[in-house]
Every structure is written in structure tokens, then in C-alpha cells.
Length: 375
Image 1 (cartoon, rainbow, N blue to C red):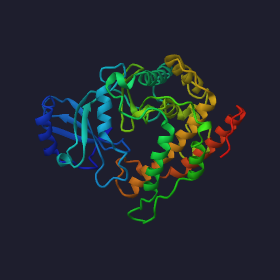
Image 2: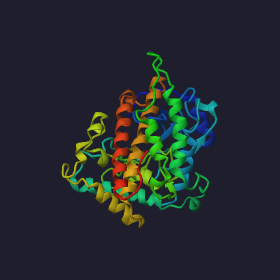
Image 3: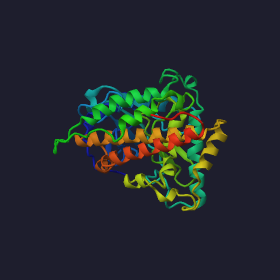
Image 4: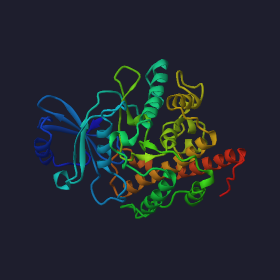
């Protein structure tokens, strides 16, 4: 999955830093860049001395659109803090915040020898393993949500309570900046997400929001951010921690289960996000969304209210449209690190339309429970 370097780094400067600060990593190094990583460029480092492999994550080059994104220091902190817990994470070797070394802040972690699946349907595995791998993904999330921030010295990693309102405020700032990004060739701005104002108005209504809870949250917990054992059906590592904080656990759960939520949605199909493999009964061994929720509830002891899950699903899709807009903005400025950034950028508008449809479906569920759901 690693290939040609698209965003060059000063290898000699990096090697000097490693020799001074991480002597257990033997230089000289061979460097390749991973094709994935929509936000932070990710590199494979291989020691020519002993063949050991490591992974480096760095901020993108150039002036960044948002100070709240690309925080590799937060990634390092939480990975390092979780190393001695039941949560499977790589080993974090070092964090360098000196831009003079390779141009931006970066950190280095261990390379996990396992399988990464771009397709959450987990193709080319047996039905039995597919079910067990999804069960492992759900239970690993429940284990992560059960770690108390104070128990690993990260009680100040984020603010307790009121997570979704804080997210709305943060996304407003980010989305405004992203919408103004102008394509370097066409000179056309990225623009606003469809139904953005209506969605924000709905999500801001305190009486319809899920009950407030506070746990660690990963921020982008999904199948392609996990490493599975090379042959066995379980998770051996969680990757891409840049959006981790203290927040509402439903945000991670709905993100993980989004393929089930969007499986039969025409709008999801138009956004390239409807995976028929998740239609019940279509794929051997594939669990249902209800089974996944039951596994999570069993592990955490928390009973999830259907209307709260529907609200979180709608918010997760709205959040997804913000992420797509961000990729579109970086693509417009030619700062995107992924080879597929242009494809993701094109999904911003249909993703926004899908978010609005989910909001409308959520309002029906809330009204069915006797809650006011007007905008």
C-alpha cells in the first residue's frame, strides 16, 4: 500500500533527528508514502540496517485552513497513553514539533504487520471470519470507550460534556473557511454544503439531542482505520487518531456502522456510499446493524435509545459532509495527500443531501416518541 513519494521530505534531516532522539531506529532509511491518509501525509520508513519498518505521520505542507485539524501531537499523545491498556494501538516512538526538521511537525510509530481493508465489507475472507472481524471491531470500540481518560493521564485531553454543541461550533468555523477555498485552476470556490443552515438549526436543539455522555472518542473509527491480524479475525491496531478527544460515544459508533445505515439509501448511492454488501442477507457472515448494537451494548452495559441512534446517524452524515468539504478544499488548493482526493471532493454535495434526508427521518422518529422535532 506504500509507493512513490508525492510530498517530498528532507530525508537526511529526518535521519539526523532519528539518530539523535530515537537511536533504536537504525538509519539509513528507505522511504515510501502510503496511498491512504486523506489529511496527514503518512510514510513507511524501512531501516536498511535490519529491515525493521516504522510509520511516520506529518502535517500537510503549506498554510493550513484550520488550526484545529492535522494535530499530529494529539495523535501521538493518545497512542502513547493507550499503549498499556487493552486497546490495541501501535507503539509511539517520538513526537517532533520542530518544523525545521522536515518542514512540519511529525511523529513516528511502529509498523503493524497485518491487514487493512479499504472495503468495510471485508472481501476475500470467509463468512465466519467476516462476522468475527466485525464483532472484534465493535468490541474493540466498546473497550476503548470504557477507558477512563484520567486512568491514563489524559483527563484534560478534551472537555467533558456538551460534545455535540462543541462540535457544531467547531464545524461552523471549519466549514466557513473550507467554503471559501478557491480552486487554483478554475478560481471557483468550494462553496457551502447543501442544507447546511437547516441541519445546524436542527442539531442545535437541546431537547432533541441524545443524553449527554463523556468518554474517549476516536473521531474517525471505521474499518479502514484498523489493522487486523494477518490470518486471525481480530483487530491488532487502531490508526488515524488526529480527531481523538473526549466526547459522546455515539459519534464513534455511528461512524463505524454507517455502511449499514446507508446500504439502501439512493442518496448514498449517488455519493458512492451505498454498499449493497450491507443489505441484510446479501453477504454471507455479515452481521446486521442490530447485532452490532447488541454486541456494543453487551460490552458496555449501555442501552441505546433508537431515536438517539437516529439523531447520531444524521449528525454523523452531516459531519461526513464537513469532512468531504475539507478534502474538496485541500484538493482545490492542491494540498490533499490522498491519490483519490478528487473523487472524495466530488462527494461533498450528495453527502450533504444525504445528511438532510437523515435529519428528516430522525425528526419522524422523534415525533413518534412524542418529542418536538420542528426546526
